Every structure is written in structure tokens, then in C-alpha cells.
Image 1 (tube, helix red, strand yellow):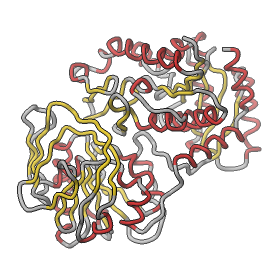
Image 2 (image 1 turned 120 degrees about the horizontal axis):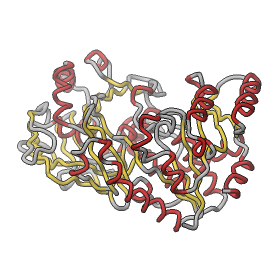
Image 3 (image 1 turned 60 degrees about the vertical axis):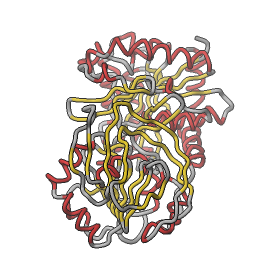
Image 4 (image 1 turned 60 degrees about the horizontal axis):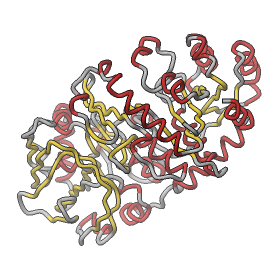
Length: 471
């Protein structure tokens, strides 16, 4: 192990760990440091295809902020929830069916070897590895099964920055309580507090920051302001506010097993977006999107139970454009077959004459394709390049009269209904401009620069440098 490590942990989920890690990665890369991200175990249905398979979207973004190519070592364990008590384990980029069948607490030691090997491989290759934790390190009921917090900090001999979301209230108590509940050796690893998402008069915070330092001996490195950065949360559809822009909204059907919702982060910055969980939320939509689904059969059951199956079908019959992406395309078809007991066999919505058969093995691939000529509302995408990624078990084929608008079974259209297997199309400025007449949000490079500026302005990076030099 030759490189140094710095770890970002949080007082709770969604405290700002991913944001601060990404910002520090961008700052280090700007300073010319060879830096890479790492998160031992991520629980999210938002994933990107990278070298070696799939990892959490947050770690792919962090790698891009570092200016390096993401690979599976940066997130060796990805847990993708399928139901309240069931999840799929992706180990070094590939599904591990055996571990997926185990209770989560029985997976711990089987996964630690891959986590440790990946971490030390990155430390040997890079000058600095910035590690993101998961949830909170203070959940003492989970300490025996820890794969992502203090066990990783100890393995990397990493000092820890603890971040808390001040917008939710109670941030000072969260920082103090997290520090206080940790065992002394782990408490000593916390070298700085960071408060995130602040709006208001900073002067009001001064007594609290001073008191926190006096009680713990740990300095507050800074207070990050509320930033509309546009990067996706790991799994936070419920926290999304309506998107920007004028006109009728785009309705994204938010079934409980929605996946890859991060691909709509760019869209919601430039157009009004509505999450649809009941039929009334489809009213007035300029377009309906059926997104990816981690569990397609369960999603069709949910659509019927909520009345959304009938509502989507009626909207399509009335001429509303309907776009299905990956699992959403499979839902648009007539039938789902499951000979390997991967997902479940069901009838689909019947809006496209398609049949999907779930294969035993998952396909993960980056894709660069091109649309053929399209008709109706999809005409603006005619002959445009379609670049994105695929993460799917289903193989979809046409069973009737339908236009194959992308080669190799990746896209089908009939009238106002379009299904594609490729994620990420609505992130591309040219496709957004062509289809919706909107200009895209800032590029990732611009977002990373803004985040690097924010930590340089609002955090005492001299203390961070000292922490790293002393570690």
C-alpha cells in the first residue's frame, strides 16, 4: 500500500457523502493529484456499465470527477434491492447468484476479501483514494457486519471527515452523537466535521460550531451551501422536486422497483418532470415514460393494482407519446417469459407486439447505435446516434407489425409508443433538443468544476492537507 486515503462518512443516509466525495475528487484532480474513488458496498438500483461490469452511479461519477476511467474495483459490492427482504448482489461487476440468496448478514465475510483486495489495489495504483462510507458509522447494531465504514477506514488507515445535512435540522447533535457513540479508537479517526446544504446567515452558526469543537476536540472544516448541482442522488426519487422549465410536465411512472432513475437528473433540470404513482398524475402529461425496473413482473402487478396500467393504455390510445426504457420497454410488450425463474412470467400492457424472455445471465454493455427513420412524435430522433448503456436480463423480439428503430432488438416503435433497451438517451443534449426543444443543463465537467470551487471556497483545505500529511 503506497497511496494515501481519506474517508468521507455521514451522520445518516443522504447527508452529503457522495457530494463531498465527488467534490474532493474534483478538487484533487484539479490539483494534479492521481486520485480515485472507492465505496466498498453500495446499496442502489442506480448503476452504470464500466470496465468489468456495473457499479453504483455515484462511484462512476466520482471516477469521472477524478479524470479516470471507472472500473469495478471502485465499488466492488453493489447491492440492488428487489423487494423489502430480497436483493441482488453484484460482486466485482457481476451478479453473484449464490450470495444473492443469502441473508445479508451472512454475506459479510464472503465479500470482505474482494473489498480489501480492491481497496489495496487502488492504493497501490493512485496517490490518493477518497473513500465514501455508507449510511452512518454509529449504527452499533450493524457493527458486526460493517463492510463500508470504520472497517474500511481501518484497512486503509484513513482519517475520516464526517458530513451532516444541516437543512434537515439537528446537524450539530448528529455530529456530536455520532462521535460520542463510537469506540475510542474509531472516534480518534474523525478529523473534521463538514456541514452540508446550508441556507441562511452563517453568523448564526458560529456559537454552534465553536461548541461542537469544544465538546469533541474535532474542528469544523467548513459549511457547504445549498447547491443545485444536478447530480443524481443514489436512490431518492421521493426527494426530487418538480423539474424546471415551462409547459406540460413529463410524467415518469415511479413503480416501487424503479431503477436507473439517475438518468433523468439532466431532464429534470431543463423540463418539468412529475413522478406518477397514481393515475391522476398522468393527466396533462406531454409524454409518459416507463423507466427501468429492477423487478419487471412486480412492476406490472403494481401498475394493475394502482390503476396505472389502464391509465397508461388509455393515454396511449388518446395519442400521448409513451416511451419505455429497458424494463419499461418490456412492460410495453404483450408477454414476459421467464424460463430460468429470474423475474417472473406475466402479460404486459400490450402496447407493442413484443415478447421478452428473461435470460439466466445479465447483459451489461455500453452501446453506440443509431436510430432509423421514425414517425410521429419520435420523428425528431430519426437517424440520431443513440449512445448509452444496457443492464438487463430480458431479450425482446417482435411478434407482430412494429418498426425496428434500433438494430439488434434495441428499439421498437408503433405510432406514439416507443420502446428502447438503452439507458441514458435523455442525458444527451442533442436528443433532448431534438425531442423536447430544450437546451441541456451544464456538462459534467462544468458541474465538477463548480463542486471543486465550492470546497476550495467553503472548506479549510489546509487542515485537510495537514490531516493527509499526518496520516
